[in-house]
Length: 344
Image (spheres, rainbow, N blue to C red):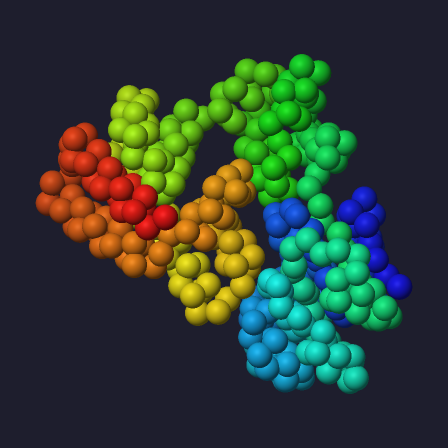
């Protein structure tokens, strides 16, 4: 039985993991699952490995045709490299029949990474993985305050900085929503403080409380949550702190396109958890997971297509007149948020 707890996982992944060919990453922290999946991939194909050595599947596809996994595991890599990596977004589907086919004829030079959500100890997938000598399950739960402090220490030490005690307390309280989000915020902070001796509260306030970014996020949140009453207020605030109107429209369009792609995948049978994870990567939504999840679940493709059409129309018009005007922007965003509200 090989089951790695959350506390043991980083140490486990830091040493040789070549004894295993199937890895199950499960838990509530999708950002941490992604980070640990990347570590396994680097261990398997090296830092110079080709992305063509990596194949991704949705759990639905593997469940519908278990042979597809065996065929892919046996495929010859046409683009070089000794190891193939198969990455599966499990969702809520049962992958055991497909995995049993591989177990009957273990494949050399093939690593399978399964990314799942929270799984109870008696979940069929966990039970199967943990009874195979060539497979391992790795828990990825949300970081607790001690985990966060360890991450802060490691990143501060790596950047050859120190941190004031009061700044450490404030920083620790701000982090922890998601591992990728935590690392991203620490990267921004250490880069901002580069060349100085210590990180202070002033550094945290200046770089992690960026007014323009918060202003844009507030507008996007109000539009795609159908909160028409807040749209006007947040647009005024964003423009007041210097956010460019055309940039605000461009960000809204990118967000709508990302939602549309992931919503279309779900409607075509992809698992919700996998689509949500992809969406959060595209829009960097790890700090707003519950909100982004609700938007992906509730907004229809039809509504998104209408939004995208309206936004593209505005973008085309700005090519002839680069200044839209505050009132036109507000009317546009109000109409979009009203459209979203009607679809809920």
